[in-house]
Image (cartoon, rainbow, N blue to C red; front, side, top):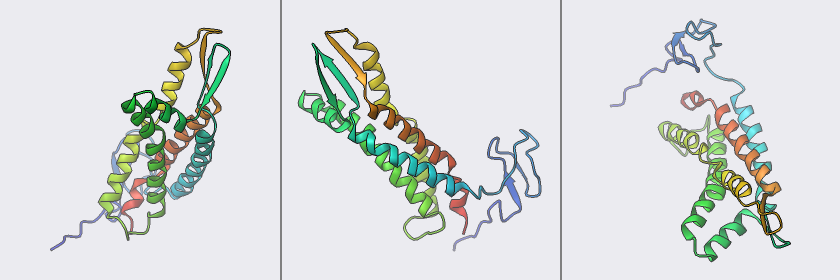
Length: 200
Protein backbone atom coordinates (compact mmCIF):
# COMPACT_ATOMS: atom_id res chain seq x y z
CA UNK A 1 0.00 0.00 0.00
CA UNK A 2 1.48 3.34 -1.07
CA UNK A 3 1.59 6.18 1.45
CA UNK A 4 0.97 9.69 0.17
CA UNK A 5 3.62 11.82 1.88
CA UNK A 6 2.80 15.56 1.76
CA UNK A 7 5.36 17.92 0.31
CA UNK A 8 6.72 20.95 2.18
CA UNK A 9 4.67 23.16 -0.10
CA UNK A 10 1.49 21.29 0.81
CA UNK A 11 2.42 21.63 4.48
CA UNK A 12 2.72 25.41 4.13
CA UNK A 13 6.51 25.48 4.39
CA UNK A 14 9.23 26.93 2.20
CA UNK A 15 12.98 26.28 2.31
CA UNK A 16 15.63 28.89 1.66
CA UNK A 17 17.46 28.00 -1.56
CA UNK A 18 20.70 29.51 -0.22
CA UNK A 19 21.06 28.06 3.31
CA UNK A 20 18.26 25.47 3.44
CA UNK A 21 16.48 26.79 6.54
CA UNK A 22 12.75 25.97 6.51
CA UNK A 23 10.20 28.71 7.23
CA UNK A 24 6.48 29.24 7.26
CA UNK A 25 5.24 30.02 3.76
CA UNK A 26 4.14 33.50 4.79
CA UNK A 27 7.73 34.50 5.70
CA UNK A 28 9.18 36.94 3.18
CA UNK A 29 12.92 36.68 3.92
CA UNK A 30 15.15 34.03 5.45
CA UNK A 31 15.84 34.64 9.14
CA UNK A 32 19.34 33.17 8.80
CA UNK A 33 20.82 34.62 5.60
CA UNK A 34 18.22 37.30 4.71
CA UNK A 35 17.61 35.81 1.25
CA UNK A 36 14.25 36.29 -0.42
CA UNK A 37 12.06 33.24 0.10
CA UNK A 38 10.14 31.83 -2.81
CA UNK A 39 8.22 28.56 -2.92
CA UNK A 40 8.83 28.21 -6.67
CA UNK A 41 10.80 30.22 -9.21
CA UNK A 42 8.02 31.07 -11.65
CA UNK A 43 10.45 32.21 -14.36
CA UNK A 44 12.80 29.25 -14.03
CA UNK A 45 11.81 27.47 -17.25
CA UNK A 46 11.99 30.70 -19.28
CA UNK A 47 15.59 31.24 -18.19
CA UNK A 48 16.43 27.57 -18.75
CA UNK A 49 15.21 27.67 -22.37
CA UNK A 50 16.97 31.00 -23.02
CA UNK A 51 20.35 29.74 -21.74
CA UNK A 52 19.80 26.36 -23.44
CA UNK A 53 19.18 28.00 -26.83
CA UNK A 54 22.21 30.29 -26.41
CA UNK A 55 24.39 27.28 -25.56
CA UNK A 56 23.13 25.35 -28.58
CA UNK A 57 23.81 28.31 -30.88
CA UNK A 58 27.39 28.56 -29.56
CA UNK A 59 27.91 24.78 -29.78
CA UNK A 60 27.35 24.68 -33.55
CA UNK A 61 30.33 26.90 -34.55
CA UNK A 62 32.40 25.21 -31.83
CA UNK A 63 32.24 22.02 -33.91
CA UNK A 64 32.49 23.64 -37.35
CA UNK A 65 35.40 26.06 -36.91
CA UNK A 66 38.97 25.08 -35.93
CA UNK A 67 39.76 24.50 -32.27
CA UNK A 68 43.54 24.55 -32.73
CA UNK A 69 45.80 26.48 -35.12
CA UNK A 70 49.18 24.72 -35.34
CA UNK A 71 52.09 26.38 -37.13
CA UNK A 72 55.18 24.30 -37.90
CA UNK A 73 58.08 25.73 -39.92
CA UNK A 74 55.83 28.23 -41.65
CA UNK A 75 52.97 25.88 -42.50
CA UNK A 76 49.70 26.21 -40.58
CA UNK A 77 47.19 23.44 -39.97
CA UNK A 78 43.70 23.84 -38.53
CA UNK A 79 41.96 21.16 -36.48
CA UNK A 80 38.32 20.94 -35.50
CA UNK A 81 37.28 18.93 -32.45
CA UNK A 82 36.34 15.86 -34.47
CA UNK A 83 39.45 16.12 -36.66
CA UNK A 84 41.57 16.27 -33.51
CA UNK A 85 39.95 13.10 -32.22
CA UNK A 86 40.64 11.33 -35.52
CA UNK A 87 44.27 12.50 -35.52
CA UNK A 88 44.83 11.34 -31.95
CA UNK A 89 43.40 7.93 -32.82
CA UNK A 90 45.51 7.69 -35.99
CA UNK A 91 48.69 8.60 -34.09
CA UNK A 92 48.22 5.70 -31.65
CA UNK A 93 46.52 7.48 -28.73
CA UNK A 94 43.06 5.86 -28.55
CA UNK A 95 42.56 6.50 -24.79
CA UNK A 96 43.19 10.24 -25.17
CA UNK A 97 41.05 10.34 -28.33
CA UNK A 98 38.19 8.68 -26.43
CA UNK A 99 38.52 11.14 -23.51
CA UNK A 100 38.47 14.14 -25.86
CA UNK A 101 35.52 12.69 -27.78
CA UNK A 102 33.55 12.09 -24.59
CA UNK A 103 34.40 15.49 -23.04
CA UNK A 104 33.93 17.54 -26.21
CA UNK A 105 31.02 15.88 -28.01
CA UNK A 106 29.22 13.16 -26.02
CA UNK A 107 28.94 15.02 -22.69
CA UNK A 108 27.85 18.39 -24.16
CA UNK A 109 25.25 16.72 -26.40
CA UNK A 110 24.08 14.63 -23.45
CA UNK A 111 23.73 17.79 -21.35
CA UNK A 112 21.66 19.49 -24.04
CA UNK A 113 19.36 16.47 -24.26
CA UNK A 114 19.06 16.09 -20.48
CA UNK A 115 18.36 19.77 -19.76
CA UNK A 116 15.90 19.98 -22.64
CA UNK A 117 14.15 16.83 -21.45
CA UNK A 118 13.89 18.07 -17.84
CA UNK A 119 12.51 21.44 -18.95
CA UNK A 120 10.03 19.88 -21.37
CA UNK A 121 8.94 17.20 -18.88
CA UNK A 122 8.54 19.58 -15.93
CA UNK A 123 4.77 19.05 -15.90
CA UNK A 124 4.56 15.82 -17.91
CA UNK A 125 5.24 12.53 -16.12
CA UNK A 126 4.88 10.07 -18.97
CA UNK A 127 8.40 8.82 -19.58
CA UNK A 128 10.29 9.03 -16.28
CA UNK A 129 9.47 8.86 -12.58
CA UNK A 130 9.95 11.91 -10.33
CA UNK A 131 12.92 10.33 -8.55
CA UNK A 132 14.54 9.45 -11.89
CA UNK A 133 14.11 13.03 -13.11
CA UNK A 134 15.72 14.35 -9.93
CA UNK A 135 18.63 11.93 -10.31
CA UNK A 136 19.05 13.06 -13.92
CA UNK A 137 19.24 16.67 -12.73
CA UNK A 138 21.93 15.73 -10.19
CA UNK A 139 23.93 13.98 -12.94
CA UNK A 140 23.71 17.11 -15.14
CA UNK A 141 24.99 19.24 -12.25
CA UNK A 142 27.85 16.82 -11.54
CA UNK A 143 28.92 16.51 -15.18
CA UNK A 144 28.92 20.29 -15.65
CA UNK A 145 32.21 20.72 -13.79
CA UNK A 146 34.03 18.42 -16.25
CA UNK A 147 32.79 20.14 -19.40
CA UNK A 148 35.75 22.51 -19.73
CA UNK A 149 38.39 19.79 -20.22
CA UNK A 150 38.78 20.53 -23.93
CA UNK A 151 39.22 24.27 -23.32
CA UNK A 152 41.84 23.59 -20.62
CA UNK A 153 43.79 21.29 -22.98
CA UNK A 154 43.82 23.99 -25.68
CA UNK A 155 44.91 26.64 -23.18
CA UNK A 156 47.76 24.45 -21.87
CA UNK A 157 48.96 23.61 -25.39
CA UNK A 158 48.83 27.26 -26.43
CA UNK A 159 50.90 28.32 -23.43
CA UNK A 160 53.48 25.51 -23.63
CA UNK A 161 54.08 25.18 -27.38
CA UNK A 162 55.46 28.57 -28.38
CA UNK A 163 58.75 28.22 -30.32
CA UNK A 164 58.34 31.24 -32.61
CA UNK A 165 59.06 30.14 -36.20
CA UNK A 166 59.62 26.47 -35.34
CA UNK A 167 56.25 25.57 -33.83
CA UNK A 168 53.35 27.44 -32.25
CA UNK A 169 49.91 26.37 -31.11
CA UNK A 170 47.11 28.92 -30.83
CA UNK A 171 43.43 28.50 -29.93
CA UNK A 172 40.94 28.89 -32.74
CA UNK A 173 37.57 30.60 -32.73
CA UNK A 174 35.95 27.27 -31.81
CA UNK A 175 37.65 27.35 -28.40
CA UNK A 176 35.82 30.57 -27.54
CA UNK A 177 32.52 29.21 -28.86
CA UNK A 178 32.95 25.98 -26.94
CA UNK A 179 33.72 27.84 -23.70
CA UNK A 180 30.64 30.00 -24.20
CA UNK A 181 28.51 26.94 -24.93
CA UNK A 182 29.66 25.25 -21.72
CA UNK A 183 29.07 28.42 -19.70
CA UNK A 184 25.57 28.85 -21.15
CA UNK A 185 24.57 25.23 -20.46
CA UNK A 186 25.87 25.54 -16.90
CA UNK A 187 23.70 28.62 -16.49
CA UNK A 188 20.75 26.67 -17.90
CA UNK A 189 21.28 23.94 -15.28
CA UNK A 190 21.60 26.55 -12.51
CA UNK A 191 18.43 28.32 -13.68
CA UNK A 192 16.41 25.11 -13.44
CA UNK A 193 14.42 24.96 -10.20
CA UNK A 194 14.41 21.24 -9.26
CA UNK A 195 11.45 21.78 -6.92
CA UNK A 196 9.11 21.98 -9.93
CA UNK A 197 9.87 18.31 -10.63
CA UNK A 198 7.72 17.40 -7.64
CA UNK A 199 4.76 19.58 -8.57
CA UNK A 200 1.64 17.94 -9.97
